Image (cartoon, rainbow, N blue to C red; front, top):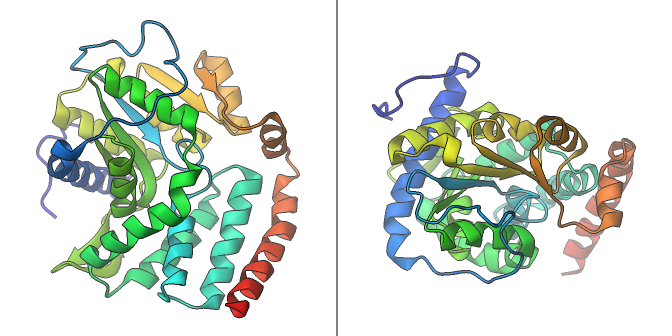
Length: 315
């Protein structure tokens, strides 16, 4: 993939792979946004903007960046995507059990565990290898309707709409495959999406990534690259996330928000005066904050996998 000339500098803390992942995500996001610009649709209303004077209408140097998993949508997109692929017989029951376990861990622990994210990535890459990109895009549209549409947080959706109403571009930024992220962005009427870019040759997936997953520092690199390409001032921009893993991205912008935050991000946000929004119920938020959630996740994950397999056998 050709190097992008508009990335003028790189942070020393970023690895070469995270920079490459960020550049690839930014390039893919701009391409998909150009293709869908004419089809953008206004979304539903809901919660009002966070402050009376923000977002600032007419600020062409501003944009908003939203993490996806547990920020815009309950749960993890990659796991819902895997569930949909299983239904279409892209893989078998063993892989289904693994997806069930990973999703249960994510829901109960309320954090992005790097090991589980890595396992999910490897699972999806092995499953899509040899399939055409166009095929996965079509399937992704169906999976969104089946498993994801009802899991969008109305409060976060309203925040995104406030930026759109102010004339600003709104981007998803996620470790999920860029194709899945782009589908979700289009369905929500957003500008586009920065996501993990899987390598394809002749429109067919090779089973490899371009760089690495768009996670942690790679997200910050993608936002930095996109802002440079779009002529944005990051000090005018806003970013929203639930995870402490996204502190590098949140720290780039002038208006960082912690949405449904995990314990580490909540602590960091309070220490730095960042605004917080929590759209979960009080009971669920308290449960996610418990240190014992990891142990509970191990037990519940095994149960979830068993239930998933039992249901699959009955079909």
